[in-house]
Picture 1 (tube, helix red, strand yellow):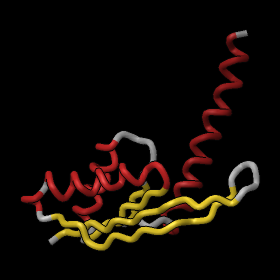
Picture 2 (spheres, rainbow, N blue to C red):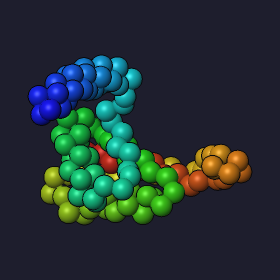
Picture 3 (tube, rainbow, N blue to C red):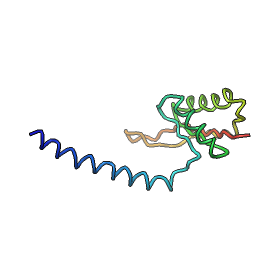
Picture 4 (tube, helix red, strand yellow):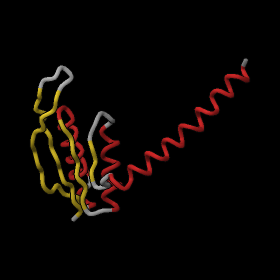
Length: 120
């Protein structure tokens, strides 16, 4: 019986990387590399991602909405204050709102923020 379980697992394992490779290939041309979307990961994960992108390109846009706005502000502040010697500064800041439909069918306004961090 253990042989049957191994045979069942192997085809599933080989099918998953193929799907992942296809989705990665289709995502790369369409996704913007200069934008960091803030979510629920630890704060320093976003700081590290932003610093890596800033090493390659002159400016990075940090975007968040709803409850993640404070985390986006924290990321921008950590980069500008803790890395003063590296020469990063906060550029434009755009705030707004989006109308989204909730699960119960109501239209809700969700606040958004976009913070641009630039190299000097």
